[in-house]
Length: 129
Length: 211
Image (cartoon, chains in turn green, orange):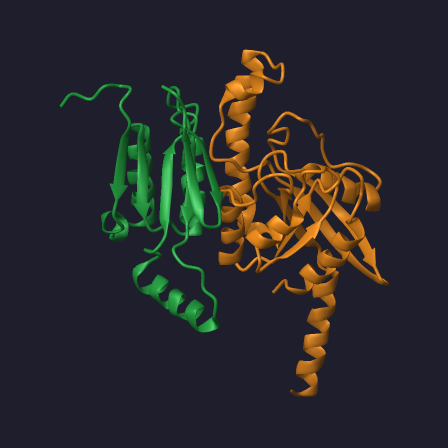
């Protein structure tokens, strides 16, 4: 089927798609999809240092790629730990298999107007096309 | 511990206290980083560090003020105040047009702002301690805030959160505290000076966490 330029593509990215990649490859993969005007729903989340690298690379692209204004990104954690035991357990799981019980939305700023977040939910507001 | 080790420890601790503390001001654009840095510099040096404006990304280069001595309860500490450009994930030059800038000026500002953000991120690891300045009238759960705090935590850099603009009706310091329960949050108004004494108290506590 031919894709219309006004079509919106949502790319569901299971954690397995980036699990074996290094940080730079992860960022390249994500930005590659964003530049194709796709909205990414990632299972899991990036490490804080990967998020800053993503912002740095985004800033480098703005101005070098026509009409690219940057990204919108927001992560939602899967569980809220109440006890120290739960925190320790979650940290061990995080070290072993990454933060897979989170979800991250990443999209191009020319498509995503705003991502509103409170601790329990994310609202995605898209621009009219 | 032998007597020599004790003397050595005292000797190094003495110089550690004397050392200049690199204190960074981080946060999203228009949160009031420069206003707070200006307030501190005015209080202790008598001059400002940078210009403030309602137009986002007014600070587009790292700004310093060295030899800022702050005194509290008879204790004096030397700071190097480092004011950084606001971190954002997007920049659209058209947003600046709304503030009356020409297209050329807006494009220049956008270009400089992207470079400023890259600089801010690069400087993160050089800080001894950081004050994350947030606008208390806005939703504190934005990813930029979480990313900044997460990065500082990963680098084991002590963080103090300044919930700024408490002079405004919409300010909600409790919400900021709720968003960052593991950190000390101080409500302040860099403009009116409200809460600044509590800020200095928290700053001296923060310095103790520097390793």
